[in-house]
Length: 195
Image (cartoon, rainbow, N blue to C red; front, side):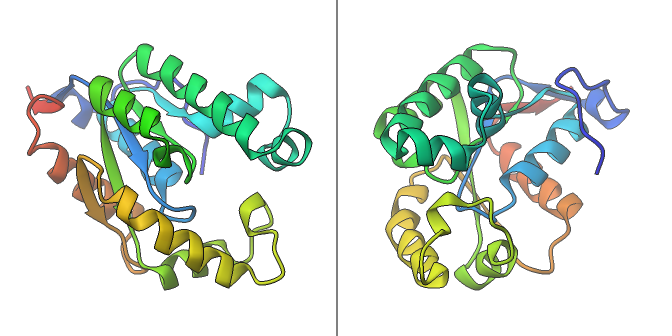
C-alpha cells in the first residue's frame, strides 16, 4: 500500500464531506486502526496522523526500542504529549496505539477535542492479525496468546467508553470498514456532515 502524505489531495468523494473534529481511532493491536484510518483519511481528503509514528520520528527509535530503553511509563507520557499536539493540529484522522485510550487523561482530551471510534474485533481476529509480527513489545512474552487475551479482557471495558463503536471481523475489507466508520460518523453531525 502506498504511503498517504499528511496533505493528501482531495478525492472526488472527499468534496462531499466536511470534517469538524479529529477522528481518533482506538482499539486493540491488530484492530486495523492504522489501515482503516489511512483509508478513511484518503476517502475524506484529510490528513492522516499516527501517534506511534510521530513518537518514533521524534525519538528516532522504534516503539519496542523505546519500551526497552525507557520503559512503558515513559512511553505513555510521551504518547499523551503527542496525542495532545496532534489534536491541536489540522483536523484529520488520528490512529493511536492500543494502550493510548486506557489513560483517563487521553480519553478526556480526545472527547473534548475530537471523537473516538473503537474498532471492535474479537480476540480470534486480533490474534490472527498479530501472531506473526514481532513489532508488538507487549506480546514479547513466553505465551503471547495468553498475554493478548489478558490485555483484551482488561481493555475491552475501557474501549467501550469510546464515542462510537464500529465492528471489525476477519472477512471485512478495509474499504467496507471505511464505509462502516463513515456511517457511524454520520450519526454525529458535530463531527462529520455532507456538503
